[in-house]
Image (cartoon, rainbow, N blue to C red; front, side, top):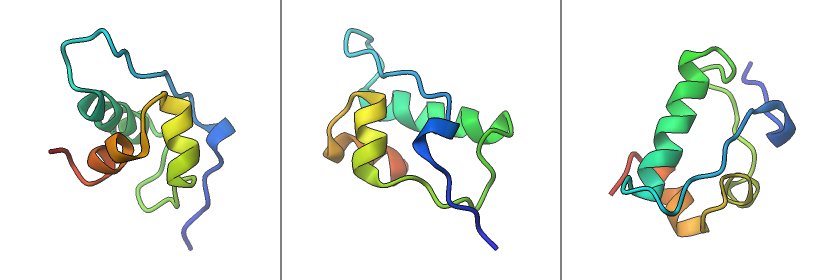
Length: 71
Protein backbone atom coordinates (compact mmCIF):
# COMPACT_ATOMS: atom_id res chain seq x y z
CA UNK A 1 0.00 0.00 0.00
CA UNK A 2 1.67 3.21 -1.18
CA UNK A 3 1.81 6.08 1.29
CA UNK A 4 0.87 9.65 0.34
CA UNK A 5 3.75 11.95 1.26
CA UNK A 6 2.98 15.48 2.42
CA UNK A 7 5.24 18.35 1.38
CA UNK A 8 6.00 19.30 5.01
CA UNK A 9 7.44 15.81 5.60
CA UNK A 10 10.20 16.39 3.04
CA UNK A 11 13.32 18.43 3.76
CA UNK A 12 13.29 20.30 0.46
CA UNK A 13 15.98 22.83 -0.36
CA UNK A 14 15.10 25.35 -3.06
CA UNK A 15 16.91 25.02 -6.38
CA UNK A 16 19.67 27.57 -6.97
CA UNK A 17 18.96 29.61 -10.12
CA UNK A 18 22.55 30.93 -10.07
CA UNK A 19 24.06 27.45 -10.25
CA UNK A 20 25.51 26.21 -13.55
CA UNK A 21 23.57 22.96 -12.95
CA UNK A 22 20.18 23.06 -14.72
CA UNK A 23 17.24 23.53 -12.35
CA UNK A 24 15.52 20.30 -13.42
CA UNK A 25 18.74 18.37 -12.65
CA UNK A 26 19.04 20.00 -9.21
CA UNK A 27 15.46 18.95 -8.42
CA UNK A 28 15.91 15.43 -9.81
CA UNK A 29 19.09 14.99 -7.74
CA UNK A 30 17.37 16.31 -4.61
CA UNK A 31 14.50 13.82 -5.05
CA UNK A 32 16.96 10.96 -5.58
CA UNK A 33 18.84 12.05 -2.45
CA UNK A 34 15.56 11.97 -0.46
CA UNK A 35 15.03 8.39 -1.64
CA UNK A 36 18.61 7.27 -0.90
CA UNK A 37 18.51 8.85 2.56
CA UNK A 38 15.27 7.00 3.38
CA UNK A 39 13.23 10.20 3.76
CA UNK A 40 11.20 9.24 0.70
CA UNK A 41 10.28 5.61 0.21
CA UNK A 42 10.28 4.13 -3.29
CA UNK A 43 6.67 3.85 -4.47
CA UNK A 44 5.48 6.69 -2.26
CA UNK A 45 2.85 8.97 -3.72
CA UNK A 46 4.44 12.39 -4.11
CA UNK A 47 2.72 15.66 -3.23
CA UNK A 48 1.00 17.43 -6.14
CA UNK A 49 3.31 18.85 -8.82
CA UNK A 50 2.31 22.43 -7.97
CA UNK A 51 3.31 21.95 -4.31
CA UNK A 52 6.64 20.41 -5.31
CA UNK A 53 7.39 23.18 -7.79
CA UNK A 54 6.62 25.84 -5.17
CA UNK A 55 8.78 24.10 -2.56
CA UNK A 56 11.73 23.82 -4.95
CA UNK A 57 11.15 27.33 -6.31
CA UNK A 58 10.87 26.19 -9.91
CA UNK A 59 8.17 26.30 -12.58
CA UNK A 60 5.84 23.40 -13.30
CA UNK A 61 7.57 22.64 -16.61
CA UNK A 62 10.90 22.33 -14.78
CA UNK A 63 9.25 20.11 -12.17
CA UNK A 64 7.83 17.87 -14.91
CA UNK A 65 11.27 17.57 -16.51
CA UNK A 66 12.78 16.57 -13.16
CA UNK A 67 10.08 13.98 -12.49
CA UNK A 68 10.40 12.49 -15.94
CA UNK A 69 14.16 12.01 -15.60
CA UNK A 70 15.41 15.16 -17.27
CA UNK A 71 15.63 16.75 -20.65
